[in-house]
Structure formats: C-alpha cells, structure tokens
Length: 134
Ligand SMILES: [Zn+2]
Image 1 (cartoon, rainbow, N blue to C red):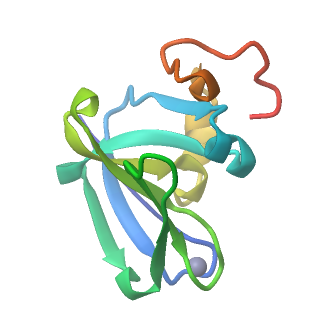
Image 2: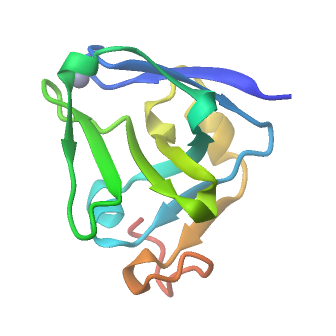
C-alpha cells in the first residue's frame, strides 16, 4: 500500500506530497543536469503527486528537447521535483527529489538499493561505469 510523503524546498516556500509504494525505486543518473545537481529521484505518477503550496515561487528550467521541466524555488534555488511527459513512464510523471522529502525518508530510501542510470549515454537501463560522483 502506498505511503504519503511530504517534502519541500529549503526555504519552505514550496511544499508537496506524493504517494509512493513501499518498493518505490530511487535512482541517480549521470546525465548533464542530474550529475551537476546530484539529483536523487523517484518517479511519481501524476495522480500520486500534489503541490501543496508555492506554485508562485516555482520557476522552471528546460534544455535540450524540453521534455522535462526542472522545477526549482526562485527563493532558495532547490529543485524539489521535475515534471515531464513520457509514454514509457505512462504519460505525465514527476521526478521527486528524494533528498527533499521530510524527516527520515531520505535515510529510509538510502537503506535500499539505489539504481544508477547512464543518462549521459541515453542508456537509462544500465549503470554508468563510474557512480561515485553521483
Ligand atoms: Zn525555497
């Protein structure tokens, strides 16, 4: 049964909640933006994600093909989540920043397997050769 987690940016302007299954996979990727931000994500379906406050404080960054909206707080700069639409992920999805979840949730997810993805080579089904920097 899914559990509801709350989270937010650093300054608290942006708050969200998402429903995650107990076996929700988390991942780190070496694509150009995930590597620089050390983005640690889990995927939430559209209906499992709710922005609670701070829509007016969110701004977005897009690059490349523009599929992903990298959403970050205009006050503190933290990226609590990204949003996109990919058929492979069932349409609209949110890439939730696990490090932005409240309380012990990051420790809870860190205790499980973390999947590494070679986004740099557009090969998300395989880990990159080096993962220590992610
Ligand atoms: Zn903020």
